[in-house]
Image (cartoon, rainbow, N blue to C red):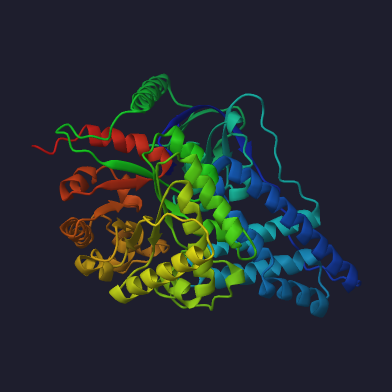
Length: 544
């Protein structure tokens, strides 16, 4: 028995035979060509093939993990069309008379190194994306087929690493788990695995592949991150028991559907779901959420290469409202910028985009885009309980400008004879220390607060949440963060409005009792966490 230590993804255990993926490796040599036109055409044809392939993968991803999970493949398509990347390759073919394969390989080395040297965590993570799209080019140009067949028997996939594209193409019905030598908990691949509910272990080290072979029996422990090769009978017995306990817990969670989110002492709280596309409503209903606490409208923009029209946006918001059958739907207005970029916006490069033109700031700078979205939202408001929420607020002046624009849009619609719900509630996200500190004043202007803890933590602790090198300094339970949350909730109630939490901390059940004691009215989490949170709430007694 050999035990490898890695990082666990998706809390579950898989036991079974191994299937090893050993990818083809091709050394890219500097090959001189004579026909520049022909080589350029080879590159352009490969580009069309890669874009077509990525669109196919994106469509599969939407079906498996929704638009939000599939957004990485839109980013890959945009990177393939990047002017600097393309010019570098084409100029190298023309000026140095090298093969398209070598030009792509050189571009990969140059741009991945450029991104990896950047301080911003979001930009640094683009290094792996450049390598992946470049490998796709090289595969098409070289005739390499990295597709692999899996036997009918369910197996644990073992590989050096898996790209997001390879992960999404895995047939979930044939996969028990996957284990990789490389990878991190924050990689796109890990996030996709979690969304697909596939237990996985990543970063077990380069040595493990040389010690395994097809057909070996192993255990992948998504709880602890252990990968156990050829376990003994005692270990197998232990994990059989652990698997049964996990199944029992899942059965208990399913039994909570239809029950109230009420503490032992009778305190009720709303549990909503966070989603990024209309297709995810199925998951919201399956997990019995009370409503949608955060609909990330920016994904309507990220999945395209041009601005969505008012009609296109209206269609999406209307569908969400209708399918929720009267349940509350809180739609966050466009939150492009920082770690979410769309090339067609033409945004300037920023040294620190997290502190730059993003969220409501961008909306104010492009009021034409903002008003189009507001019109679509108000028009959809008559089809359900739509509430509009605004991100990245730091001042009363910003809220006043928002309210003025909303009033302007309502007057326009009224003049045009277009129906809208005059009682549509407007709220703001509290995700900056500035907003939390002046929340007493802000509460007098809006109908609700939703605390975005991801950015609140980042800005309070001065820790870039995309930068792994400062991860250890990012204490999500920091007293300052909790104090700002408590202050926000107190000021909301003082002014007669409700306050919820929609960031990652909402799903941290070690803090659930703390948030309930603070008086939070609503918690919004990923659909898969709704029942776990409901269970925790029902086990809590605030009277003690």
